[in-house]
Length: 259
Image 1 (tube, rainbow, N blue to C red):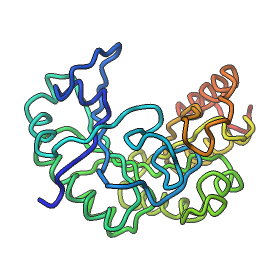
Image 2 (image 1 turned 180 degrees about the vertical axis):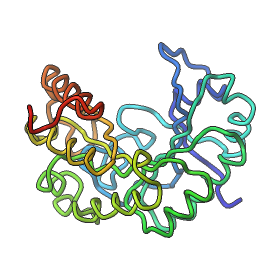
Image 3 (image 1 turned 90 degrees about the vertical axis):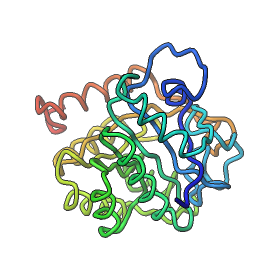
Image 4 (image 1 turned 30 degrees about the vertical axis):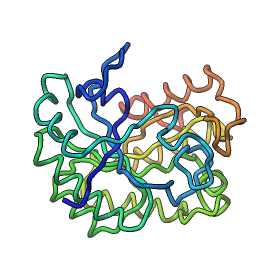
């Protein structure tokens, strides 16, 4: 096995018995992240892992993700996953050379260690890698778009940030993922509060659900050391309205055009 280390969110580490940490709510998903010495080659303005970030290198959002020996994590998953109340494993991906091979190895190793369903949160991948990951045991895939419009995308995680990502490239990747994993097994993320209007956020959500893609919502949180460390948090009432709109759309109770 080439992989030696993997990162785990501090909550996951606590549930798996790797750390002694008091938890107010025990996670039901084990969150793991590919380990890489150095920062992600992408430069997303909100991310502590971005290559231009000066945030703590063990952070993703505000959460600490310490590194652990992979074999130790796999043993803990094998021995404790179900009794600890875990229902899924989600693997977070960084952009670095040959990350595809590490991701495939990690998914295969998790699949061999436990019977929990596996999700991947990744940048765009070629269809052959998606197919290989599905064969290795990945059940779902998420390709985070994060921004509600092409213009915001460029400004926070595309060409405006010196990133290799494009709005069109992410849309193509989502369509590829649908062809490999199927409707209902492909997701994306939307970070509310990057400068979009509520109308733009809800329109994005509707377009995604019309494609068969579920949307995970996040409220923007500034992290010290990132390019957006001084950007304000979204208004809570506005975020709640977008949450409500997403619920209505996801449940088929209303459409963007009716709002």
